[in-house]
Amino acid sequence: MPLSFSLSHAAPAAVDTPLLVVVLSPASAVPDALLDLDRQLGGAMSRSVSRRDFRGGRDETLLLVGGDAGVQRVLLVGRGAAPLTRTVARRAAAVAARQASKLGVAAMHLMLDGGDADANAVEGLVIGAAAGSWSYLDLQTPPPEKDRRARLEAVTVLAADSEEIRAAFAAGVAVAEGQAIAKRLGQMPGNYCTPDTFVEVGRDIAERHGMALTVLGRAEMTARGMGSFLCVAQGTSQEPRLVTLEHRGGPEGQQPVVLIGKGLCFDTGGISIKPAPEMEWMKFDMSGAGGVMGAMEAIGRLRLPINVVGIIGSTTNMPSGEAVKPGDVVRASNGKTIEIINTDAEGRLVLADLLVYAKQFNPAIAIDAATLTGAIVIGLGHNAVGVFSTDQGAANEVLAAGQAAGEPGWGMPMWEDYREQIKSDVADMKNTGGRAAGSITAALFLQEFVDGFPFVHLDVAGTAYSQSDLGWIPKGPTGTPVGTFVEFVRTRARQ
Ligand code: BES
Ligand code: MN
Ligand code: ZN
Image (cartoon, rainbow, N blue to C red):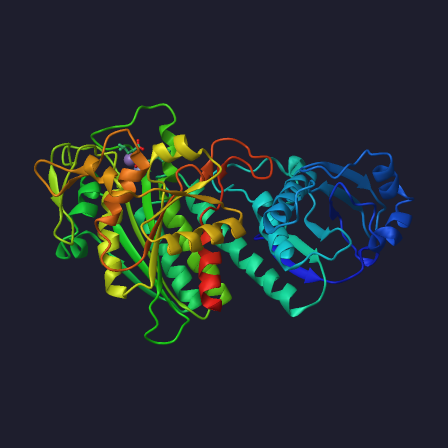
């Protein structure tokens, strides 16, 4: 049963709920709006605050037990002293939803302070509640009936009744649903999430939101001369897929925002094979493509009045007797030749042909997301998306979107001097430039395939999934970059 959301402006003491979550800051006394409820609980809330059992620190929780009806439990969740943002609200709601899942309550009500969350906070509460209760259980045998706990199925946000709040709530639900798609695709093992899975998911999104869907396979890509993408798919018998979704929400002729995603359903490294330890994490190498699918879902749900094209390139990087090998030279669909130095630098080879393909849509801007380099994990860790562009204005716009969405990025240099590293003796360029500045040379490689439109590259290798529990969300896929994409497109749609 999927999670359902609703918005209500009922008084907290009047709701009937197994769990009421109240998000508070360290400064908060019990808000006036909760005094009725506090009385119903025999003053437990105000005593917890005055005794400092609950101090409102970030991620702090305190569960209070209520009666058999009305508000049956209250969970106080701290949001810390930092200024209230969408990200702060998201985190608190995620902590609450994780707790609710452990308790086994099927429904929860969520409120911030006295129930006066602003639009940004409402959006964050919805996204956080979805993130904290997300799980992927398809491949696990459920526990015996007696040990089962109810799953969280319904979340109600208590907030003011206004047009702005309703819009923020809808945006939150859309982003949450988009992130659920991206996270599910990310968590699916490589033998379940294949290039054809992207076709199925793309078709489903297209049908529900009235988007045009185009699917290319090996034959169509061969006809288009996509030798760069295709060389990555040489080692697998699986059909590689290039899937395009077109959302035509804007006026006819309006140049679209083009979102591009790397969709490696698994990356073994190919002939330049990766070491065995932790190789299983390379099922997440499709997170860029998952992010594009998730963003298109959200954009479709919100019916944003703007043209957006989503393009994903999906295959699996495998060694085989037929696989591309170091020293081979391939030709991309713009005619440029590439010397393969390392078959593990495959993402840029897929993206090269996608960027050439994007040109036909006459993009207002193209933004790609890719788990492109291990080097970005070394450089920025798991807290920042690597943002690359030769267009500072475009980069700033994407950085602002990522910041607002709680998926912060950091601008990286794209200086010409680095280009020396990808010069080849036999072809127009090499596919790797050595260890130094590995994320930058990857971005400069991509730039070679961009012809006449602003382009921003997002390296999400450190941020699309987490190998450790982050407290507010479990280890696994994070939903990045869905929030950034949706925020960027929403902002453009308002202009
Ligand atoms: N998918 C990987 C990048 C990656 C590495 C993502 C670690 C997440 C964690 C990419 O295809 C890759 O293998 N890149 C190589 C490039 C190198 C051969 C120039 C890398 O980063 O090691
Ligand atoms: Mn690789
Ligand atoms: Zn890869």
